Image (cartoon, rainbow, N blue to C red; front, side, top):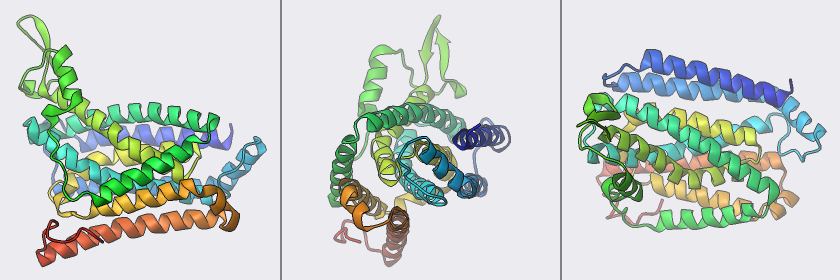
Length: 338
């Protein structure tokens, strides 16, 4: 068994055990999740990702050597691959916080009872993971065959980051006006209740789909929309499929506990969007100038630079938001700059 296969196997085993633990012990049907429980669950998923980071650090030299021996240009040497994973994970984790804004709107719009939150989020996130695996696989194959696609990703990230940073006011997202909901309403018999926790039930002798079913589909669809930004951004940090897959899945799996931990405070992070925007622009610019950047900066230095920019921008935007809220300055009064 090769080192890459071993790492994938360890990741899969850890993933299955963690899901069983999370589903069987930390999640009870029709039971609300407290802030304390959410904190422990968030610490569990973050800690698991850090343990995997340490494992990749230990196996890094073997992974890099194996890549070179297979005749493929190595993107990392030694512990560098582990640092790429950490950078990608932090990038995905910060973008996950942005997801929570939309998740709150979806739950509120469809009047989901709090006792159904845990299971609905779990099913929605598992669907999102499945779709992300497909999405990432297609992206990796396309980049391997057509490397110039990375330049398109770079332009897209710079444009997305610029639009995100200069946006003065967020347009209110109405789930009932979304294309996904209109599509479901057109082709499926929907009912305006949660079926007491059921997703599909029978009424008048025919199957109908409850509001919980709609919410699950919307959660998965919205995550795919966010993936249009996050996956190209991760490819700008690392081109190794192992890093791209694992960082994405770890971040998405921790999204549910992060939702319960931050749902009351996430609206206080007024400037998080600007912090994420700067990171997207930086990663996009790095992708566009990678050829010239490689000529005068070692890959290891680039990894540390990416990690530093991500940590500085995300933590800086969060602390700046807290500082401005403490001063009582609304976002629309300030000029929106960090």
